[in-house]
Image (cartoon, rainbow, N blue to C red; front, side, top):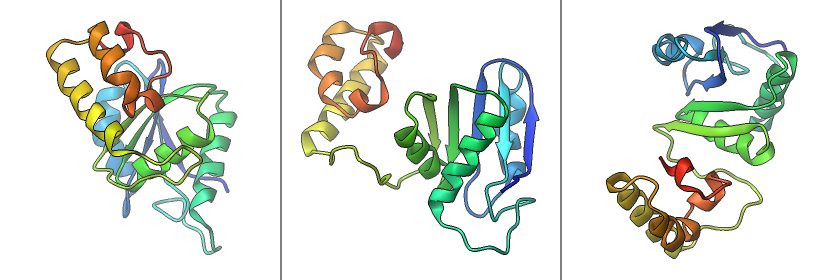
Length: 167
């Protein structure tokens, strides 16, 4: 499907995904600021805004659409900012193509993605909370990374567990 895509700015790419209901117009609040230092790509997801369709589709079609957008623009890696439904799609895209996603920014996204990753254990949730709090107080502290972060959900989000990545 040929989606409507709004672009602005130059620099490292950030793919901005709107929520439901919404469109790229609702992502302009982020795009204006981010475009000062980044190339911001804001599509209207299939069935939304100017990417209306009368054909039935499933949620995974969004992933195929987004991969096509990245391919058309020769973007091999990007950060994804997802708002609500856009955050769910961002997580799913990161699970499908982890080599293409350098980071996630999730806004008002509470859903759990469906994917092949292991089920979350209570200990991982506890260690995630502790690691985040300690890292906020002492960013990049190696002891915190070794003691809590490597056992937390950060192990799925941050490939290289080094202090610079936590700063």
